[in-house]
Image 1 (cartoon, rainbow, N blue to C red):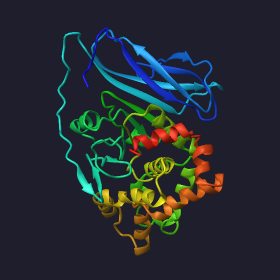
Image 2: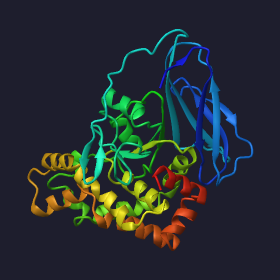
Image 3: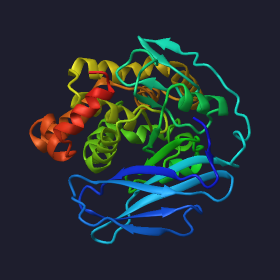
Image 4: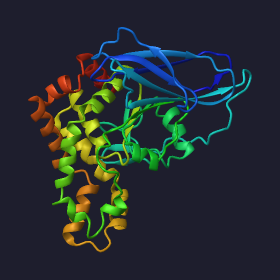
Length: 354
């Protein structure tokens, strides 16, 4: 994608909703969030959200980062921030610093191609070519050439980051030029977690039997439906290639992708297979983390540790069960809890090639 030029208008578009309230205004910042300019969105409907458009004409060359957030009808700021990264050059100039290019060199595991140190892969498996929706771990350690390939070869235009504030602070990640990053912050009511301090011998046993704590976590994920709903409606409304990730790309990303697949009409066996593929794709990472944390552990403590590191059928089943218990059926959870309309579901299915 070519850079933008000085004095040429740049159109930036986004989608936002507050889930519980209508959007009253969109606020934009070009100085890192120091100051915000507010634009009212009169007549916005809660269940529909706001598709907004902003035209900016840059006066100077450089790399820009524009942040956008919303204000709801109750005057409250959204926990969702959208960030647009773009480059502006002189009128007669070419792009600035040359980024090392790389061709996609996919690895294959369990019928799913992956790319990069962050294991980007198509949701629902298959090949990278022509895929529109992807999942991965965070991009904290991504190399410049990997980010370039994400944008220019995979065609990703939106990145959905579902890490909490502690995770983003400890593992900040770059904003790839020509993409939009949507930061959806999960609940931070729980304590800040540190694997090196809690998943160790003599401490890990406090989390109960193997799988017990993770099953509770997945049941809680089902109750974070405003977060899931906001992400899925945004992806469906925009209809562009998108990547979603948490830290490791296993738990929050796993339930998000499972919900997308079920909303798009995939059967539960296929959904479970896609979820469990994480264990094969991340096998080396899981083994390395287990080796780093397991020193001095008893057999039972090691079993608890592995239950934290692996995707397990019982976890996703707990998520589905909690959602079904709350709404009667999982389909009702999708339509009433997440507020996905038939149009949203059709758009998700189209992005998945159905």
